[in-house]
Length: 367
Image (cartoon, rainbow, N blue to C red; front, side, top):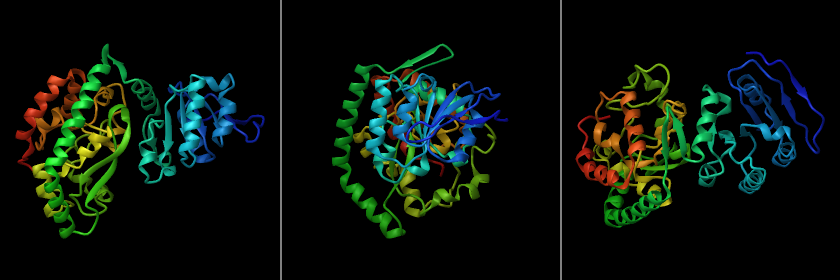
């Protein structure tokens, strides 16, 4: 794919910006890039029909206020995160009726502060240096999910406000009650983890939940430290290894990275208890679809799979009571269960899943 030309336009005080010329591509979308990295600009020029670029937020406002700036489809930010600047920029977008354009941040500029990853202004976080996926499906998905209203194959999925309020109230009441009752167990588990191996008691990682919203996900640590860095070395053991393209999941039987205490916690699902704090924060619900690691979620932002992100992230759900702990489960089965819940979700269905959950807690297989 060749770029016809990249032209320097007249200076926009106090910075300059670029206009990327039309290219031969199926992606009939235009980007707005905020940053100065030429490699990132070249990547975007290869995947988009055209776009604009500015070096900072203030210059961006001047350009987006112009007629040409109103035709962009996505905003990609590649500058250090500053909550105040981003909030001001988003207010500008709302005033210009440009808030529907997804805002994607380059992950290298986000630190470990929870305020970065939980900023609701940001619609997605990606690694521009190692991007391997299709921008077109991702951006179209993000545009749909911003309103939690999606249409795929004539299927409408919409979150009703009254149901959302009732579900949220139920989550808060039950999560608070469970944390109070289970506090002694939480304390014992924390001590056991600390005595067995060096490292933190809790494991937290970025996960994608409803509408692809990214948040810090909490669990008791069940693996040795830096287990995520060993995924490539263990890829040949992946139970989903027969899938060479499309959706990606990673899970292996008898994972060698799991500690002895961790094995017990996983088989009894006690490692999941810290997610009650996620429920209280509003990141998750007691019932929903499992929040996914970003490397898995990035492969599911297509029209075929988009519906599974319309349901809230949950501690338990249809997948857990139907297939949890069964190594023969396929990727298609797991996604179908997620989509089925998204379509049928209601309070009575949630109560039914909660009632079925205790029987599914004890696993027979170490997966």
